[in-house]
Image 1 (cartoon, rainbow, N blue to C red):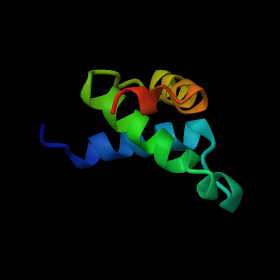
Image 2 (tube, rainbow, N blue to C red):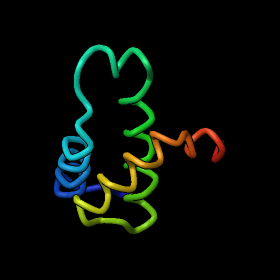
Image 3 (tube, helix red, strand yellow):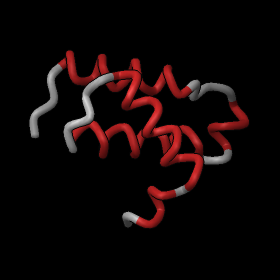
Image 4 (cartoon, rainbow, N blue to C red):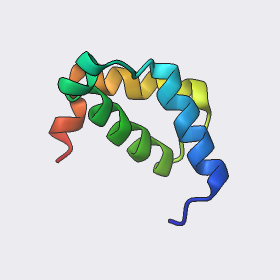
Length: 69
């Protein structure tokens, strides 16, 4: 899949929607987990920024991402 600048804009908006910021969350790996979830969900077809943010936040919080490895 080739991603366009518009794709990255949507993913960035979703990351902001999850509220991924601050040094504490970055240390805990939260930012990385959310980022992985956003990419997986987006490439699977979830392209609405609000839905993408909600689903990625849930995935990161429940650590479902670790089960997909």
